[in-house]
Image (cartoon, rainbow, N blue to C red; front, side, top):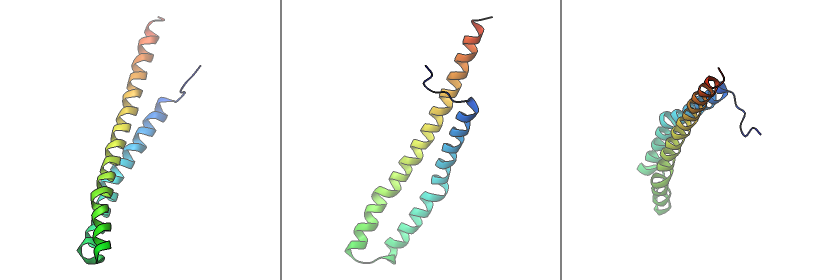
Length: 98
């Protein structure tokens, strides 16, 4: 019974897409979120509710984006490591039948 039937190229494509998502978060989403939050914090919103909103977003949203980025980097590495291990095992197994 095959648990996972994926071509090596598909795994590499998957790892590349996950890496691209991580890069997008790091290069675009996080800086944009920080800019918006700084604008809100520096007068874009006023009052106690504004302080609570911007403080909460700065305390949780940006760190959560950083954690998402780190997790995506980890997933891409895991995919590539799995691909490498599978290729090594295929080579080792093929050598047993010569």
